[in-house]
Amino acid sequence: MQVALFIPCFIDAFFPEVGIATLELLEKTGCTVVYPFNQTCCGQPMGNSGCETDARGTEALFVQNFADYDYVVSPSGSCVHHVRDHLTAVEQDSATRKVRASTYELVEFLHDVLKITDFPWAEFPHKVGLHNSCGTLRRLGHASTSELNVTPWSKPLDLLRGVKGIEFVTPKRPDECCGFGGTFCVTEEPVSARMGYDKVRDHAGAGAQYIVSADMSCLMHQKGCAERLGMPLKFIHIAQILNGARG
Image (tube, helix red, strand yellow):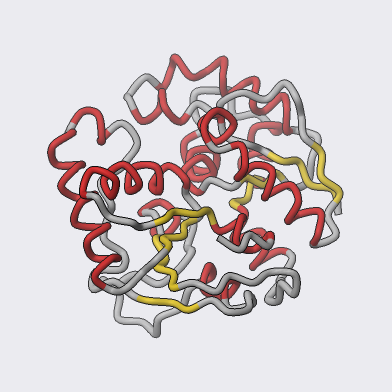
């Protein structure tokens, strides 16, 4: 299966190890991975800031880069959420509609498309707390949410259960927002910071050594909050664990 890899601009700039882990993981699962070198941003920062029309050129370039592929995979739930639900500044022609429909976040691609449940090369002997971002929960359908009276389920946990040695701990409020929220953390800094402090305290109180997520943006925010509080928490993207990182 040929897959086009979409690496968000902030991961390329600040967390290249997450992009590398995603590439290696997809190759380990048997995918042929193509990386379009002209890719830049999907336009999410402008969309989050209310500058939709300013994102038109960025979105057009995104469609141009990925229109020829059946699957586009990215290690960022928020970016996939933008492409799928908010890539609206660009003309909605057949190429745009195809790209929006074929863009997948890494967890859902592994779980729903490849249907992988076992990662024999992976071992992570640590206590882990899972953070699901608001977008992956309520737009991408990563897991059940506490406001719905349904039997709990989780795609990230389904995947992580295929990793040897991992131990899960659960915070008291597992699906509460961490306060990142794109540009919300800039425009509402005090509220965002308090939400981040509450989130990392909740994970630490549950006994987590690592917080894992499919969204490095949320982890970036929480890492800053934990460091300000002097907490020894560590943060890791789910692609790194599934690819075989030992911590």
